[in-house]
Amino acid sequence: MCKEVMNKSIKRILTAVAGVILCVSCDPNLLIESPTDRLSDTQFWNSLDDAETSLYGTLAHCRNVFYQEFFLDGHGEYVRMNNNKFKPSGYGSRFDAMYKSCYTAINHLNYTIDHTNEFLKGVSDPDDVEMLERVVGEARLWRATVYLRLVAFWGDVPLLDHIVTDMQQVDTIGRTSIAALRKFMVEDLTYAFEKLPEPGATIKGRSSKVAALAMRGKVNLYWASWNNFGWPEVAEMGTFKASKTEALSAYKAAMDDFEDVINDYGLTLFRDGEPGDWGEMGKCDVLPNYFYLFQPEADGCSEMIMTLSYGGQGTDQSEQLMYEFGNYSTEKAPGRLTPRSEIIDRYQSTITGDFCEPVVRDPNAKLKNGACNPETYRNRDYRMKATMLWNGESMPTMMELKDTGVKRYMYKQYTGTAVGAGGDELELLTVSEDETGLIFRKFVRDHAGAYNNEGDYDFPLIRLADVYLMYAEAANEFYGGYTDQALALVNKVRHRGNLPELAPEKYSTKEAFFEAIKQERIVELIGEGQRQFDIRRWRDIANVFGPAYGSGVHFFDTKGSDKGNVWKAADPKSYQKCYVFQFPTSEVDRNPNIDQTPCWN
Image (cartoon, rainbow, N blue to C red; front, side):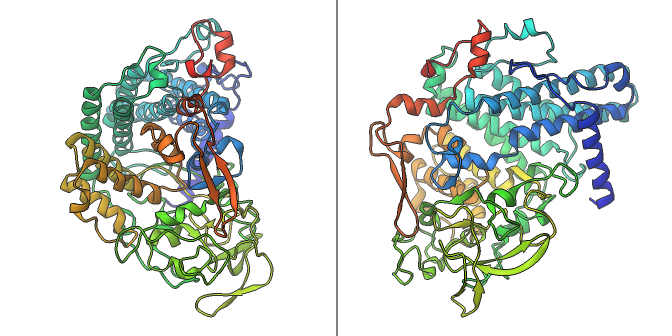
């Protein structure tokens, strides 16, 4: 999109937020967050443009739900987040604000849906009907997406399918079963799929029918997972009973949706999924293609199926990816997210296609296979160099909107210079959060011109690579093992890391192929907020961190220093509380029809 059109779109968003739904109710009830400071309906809903303006404002509230997706990776084992809310254990009681944001978004979406549907009754021109139905379709896509977040965190939650302004009504709304909520989400997404345009017929920040189709597949996949692996914390409420038959049916529905996404719309992986060039050890003038997938130049590529759109400088609609993933030398970013050293061993060999010998965490920079020895990282999955820096790696830096040259990373060293593997000497990076021996390159801009909190990159909620892996997962479960198509799709994702294809004979069982899918999801989607949902829907917390009352897991930095222990001697109830979050106590206290989730009593 040209800058003039983009700026007009951004202005419309800001106008909508300021003039239509600027403020929300301050009532302590988290379900009702009404757009109380807005033009009256008689003043506002007078033209076709009002529907789109309302939608733009509503999407700003959806952004409040999803704009920090990457923090959720802190609940897993491979990303460190400097915030107790996003640590690998004990997080289920810390998400009341998320619950509130979800229902704020839902009530605004219902406002747009209800009023646009009412407006539709008086419209006869086919083009006008199509435009208004497109608005309703997009709002229903996002409503389903927000409900999937609510269900994945809290299980049975209240269903609001219309504008709610009556406090007495809100105070008596009970929970709705996840089965009924799944049906509601599928209906929303089916309508969205029917009414939204084809890919390429949308403007920046708007969704196509492929997004609805992919999200419907994701809803079906999650429903299948809960039925397949069980969700006893929700079952204890008496509204859900896991069913293998239901799981197979949902896996098939998910597989069909994903297959349509893959085959029917001409979508391709960024730069055709080619790995690009590794470049040279310690240098950053050439980087693998995976790195550029997370730079603004990838905005609008067909791999990005559903994204959060951001406006950049001067819009009050900017992303903060550099702020969270960067370092002090990249516009003074605090860099609160860092890869844990444990992720090193997940990056496989480009020669054998298999896992490398586990690294030795030791300060000796010349130790064979040592985590502080740059030579350890040769011939590994290209996504590793595109995702992070280890000792000796370098990156462009910037300050006050100006380039400040390429600098080198050395763990816990911030002054002076260091010589790289190629003999070049560079000034050292200054890093604010430096606790693991690795820092992120993924999502960190490689060019000056914007401050650390003024980015314009469209953050992905669903990418084509994710769809490939979700399809493979669904097919593996439905058929009881890999299919040729599922194997081929996993290999396409691996190819961008310049890895050899999986040998079919090594993945002849459903269990073995599932482990290969898990592996690809870890390295392909790191930093995108997916890991937490995966380990919860697969009932994998104890597999990842050890059983109840066990020794838990210690994290170490690349030098071998112990950086903390999680899940040590944890009781079973502690695990349950991470599988389903605490229902906000304010809702339980004020509403006699809502009981607290049993494991939180």
